[in-house]
Length: 490
Image 1: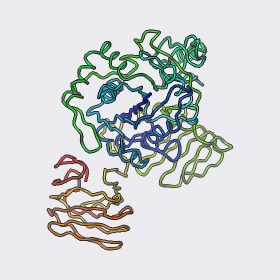
Image 2 (image 1 turned 45 degrees about the vertical axis):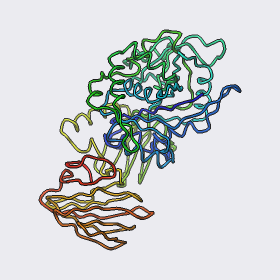
Image 3 (image 1 turned 90 degrees about the vertical axis):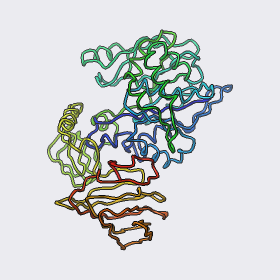
Image 4 (image 1 turned 180 degrees about the vertical axis):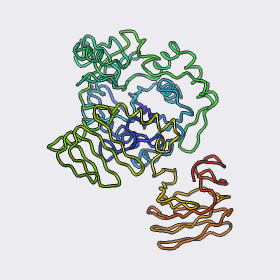
């Protein structure tokens, strides 16, 4: 039996602002340990084996669905795990929620008349007991029927209004850990959530599903024919771009936006849906309060990260990334400090971070979209200082990577090598620079920066000129097939 992991990585992660940004959302952050959420989602399947002696499980390389802006982040994080080879990165041209994303994944998985079992997982969930998750997954793989969906429910610990709920029924006669799934319910108000918890048969909907690829395509064709038709047509016009599968943007933009639950799960017949209760310390890390709950705490209930001092403080989440943070005489508060923003919020009000992000969006503030350190397919850059007619950046170029061949009309650049070796193209001249060496790129000169070495290349770049915006660029050649001119990145 082939199991195809389908990882949905389209979330913006705004509920964890300011750590999570639109260009670098929470699935790419190490919120649950040393690895990122996306990487944990992939590696938690390692060691999966069938519990039935006559059933062999073979886990295929991951199929990740993401948006255009995150494609290089996904590729980089897969590469860091040595999982890029064989993996599929499928790009959604525009966000249309999870049902179209899964439909595209199912179309990809069923090429060459295949019909693998799909394990559908959000990229940004925490499971602290992955061995238990693998045991329950193996159980589901063993007992699932060709025209069934298995979903994983979570026993609620509180009347949470941020999750959808599912109602369980009777256990199967052949497996007491699998139940009939009687009902899907969307996110409730607080009184309804309290009633669900008191009832004892309602569970949080984890958003993790197990089903055969062909069965999903049958369901979506029956229940959402317009959505299915648009996805099929857009997928038929796919193209391969380096490590990425691209589908037709113009066609896909006409697709209805629907979640998996709304489009299909709420309409399943009772014999088509099964439920496995998962007690594996799961969390969707959907708020700062949930981050606090899942992290280690000191004897006063404080969870701290970074350079933090506390006195007479209890029950706080305190994260300092760039400066010393002192918390004195406060309780049940979340303080998150980044280089360009600080969030201070009562722990019981963390769902209201959306009010902050709405304000930032309404005022077109950069703090909503990106971190001070901007990630690029060749590495990253960070603005150190900016003033009238000048800007200073720190560039990090990964080994073997290269910026595009480009020129600027409004600024000149000075490069100083801090560490590593730089290969510099300046018009027809090509030369190497090593530590403490520098060069000057005049306005209007074609240039390129490459890292031919085996360690990261660190560069200090001083820009000077009448206009320093990232859109002052004419691109001639690019390894990463980005837009030739007027791009928003180097």
